[in-house]
Each structure stands twice: as C-alpha cells, then as structure tokens.
Amino acid sequence: MIPVLSVQNLTKEYSGKKVVDGLSFSLLPGQIMAFVGPNGAGKSTTIRMITGLTPITDGSVRICGYSINKNFKLAIENVGAVVEMPQLYPYLSGYKNLKLFASLQKGISEERINNIIQLVGMENRIHDKFSTYSLGMKQRLGIAQALLNKPKLLILDEPTNGLDPNGIVEIRNILRILAQKEKIAIIISSHNLAELEQICDMIMLINGGKIIEYKSMQDLENLVAGENKVQLVCNYPNYAGMLLKQTYGIKCKVVGNSVYVPVKEKDLAAVITFLTNKKIKIYSIKKIHKSLEDLYFELLNNKRSSSSII
Ligand SMILES: Nc1ncnc2c1ncn2[C@@H]1O[C@H](COP(=O)(O)OP(=O)(O)OP(=O)(O)O)[C@@H](O)[C@H]1O
Ligand SMILES: [Mg+2]
Image (cartoon, rainbow, N blue to C red):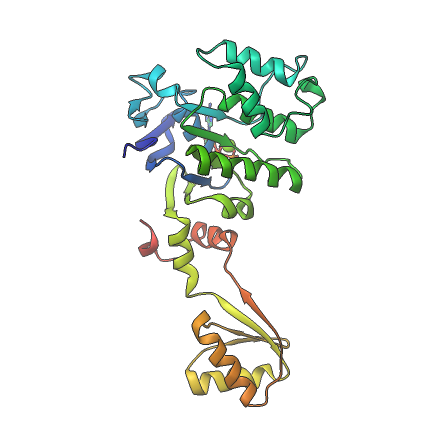
C-alpha cells in the first residue's frame, strides 16, 4: 500500500539554524497522527513544508507517491489543510465562500459542497456571513473548505485552539468520521493532549526540530500498561501496604487513607480478596492511568530511557 504521506529526512534551516532536523515518518489511509511538541518545536514549519507553503531545505515529502517538489500539482491535489486560523472572506456567507473556493478548482459539484456542509454540521448557518460566525463555526467552515477537493490527506494546525468543550467534541466527531468512513489520513497539531489521546492512532513528539517519540497509541499504552496503579481507599492503608509487600513482594505507596498498588488487572481480584480476608475494609477502588500528558512531560524531560524510542 502506498502511504498517503511519506516524509524522509525533512529539514528546514533559517539563517543556518536547523528548526526542523531530519524528520522521517509516514501515514497510511485512515490513520490520524497527533503532532505535538512545545512552542517553537517546529510543528508549523513542518506542516508548511508538507503543504508547499515554505521551501524544503533538505529531504523529501511525497503525497500519494508524488513529490511535493517535483510534482507539486499532482501532490497538492491530494491535500487539504487548515493552517492556523482559516482565512475566508468575512463579508461573504459561508456558502458563498465555499462556492468561490470550489470554482477555483476543477470538478467540485454542487452535491459535494452540500454533502460537506452536512458533514461539518453547518446547514443552519451556512447562508450567514462568515464574520458573524463563532470561532467553532469558523473552524468548521475552514475544515469544509479543506475537504472540497476530496483530499486523501488532511492537515490541521491547532484545529481546536480556543474552542469550548462542545466545539472540541464536534470537531473530534467530524475527524473520526473522515478517518473511518472516508479513509482520509489526518495530521493534527495541537497542545490539547487529552483531546488528541481520544482520536489519534499515532503520535509524533518533536522538540528542537527532532523526533523525540514516534509510536502508535497502542504501543504507547502497552509501554505504560505495567505502570498503571490501583488506588484503594481503606481503613489501614499502611498495614495493607506492608501485607502486600510481605506476601506478594508488591511495593505500594501510601498517601493519606489510600494505598496505591501497582497491580495488573488480572491480579486485582486476588489482591482485594487477600486484603478483605485480613479484615481490611476497602471503601473505594480506582484505576489510575498514566495520561498522554504525563508521558509527554516524561519524554520531554528525558525521564524515560531512550530504549523506548523507535
Ligand atoms: N520565517 C521564519 N524565519 C525565521 N525563523 C522562523 C520562521 N518561522 C519559524 N521560525 C522559527 O522556527 C522555529 C519553529 O517554529 P514553528 O512555528 O514551526 O514552531 P511550532 O512547533 O509550530 O510552535 P507553536 O507551538 O508555538 O505553534 C521557531 O524557533 C521559530 O522562531
Ligand atoms: Mg505552530
């Protein structure tokens, strides 16, 4: 299968300084990749190179097999992008904006425009002026515009920036449908890690223009699975911790009236039964998962061994 996007050794220099430094990765149809990293890490610059908005210093970008340098037109036909805030005509309605953009490209039917308006849930407001839209509606119209030419790759730079929780959920649902039903590959650059965690299949973390981590979400979850803990609120947490250490060799942490037990799901029932048999009263049980945000900071601060890096 030809990747929708294949990036090899992508590099950008400004005044002799590498702000993107040898990035290589690829995306298959329907995959959603989270593109994360601190301010100035090089995310927008990478996106600008992939979409042909800024020249590439070194390396290559191929979209559906076409080089963005050598076959710009064939490559870019397959890309839809919203880079930062969508720039549309404020005095035209959402509909007229879409019609205008559609007229600049070949073969975009009225039916396609109407389908997209439905997909992004803008039917009720599409004939209002763009300037009257809320931030969420502007973002949705930006996505609609990027989808007009049926792209195989959709790139969104901070699509939920400034949106309220409702707006975020709406955009998330639209992106899920696009990936699952239309098999569009999507790159989302965002600082909203909790949000990305819910929809992405892949994650790329960069810093100083270099890849710090590039993994599937599944691999990331497996990586931390052994580190998940169970919080037990009970009457004698210190005693419970001591018993678990003595009998099973499990090292627990005790905070207040809680004992944090690093235990796999399959062993949890045995631990609870054991403690109950020892007359310890358990008042609540809660699984503590390591979040993408926890991992992000560990990886950035080098608290994880580099053996986990692909
Ligand atoms: N046109 C330019 N000329 C010189 N330096 C630039 C230019 N554009 C970006 N840079 C520098 O390149 C680096 C990467 O910037 P970039 O905008 O790609 O970061 P980012 O990861 O998108 O950050 P943010 O999360 O703040 O959006 C920064 O140090 C920035 O100052
Ligand atoms: Mg940016």
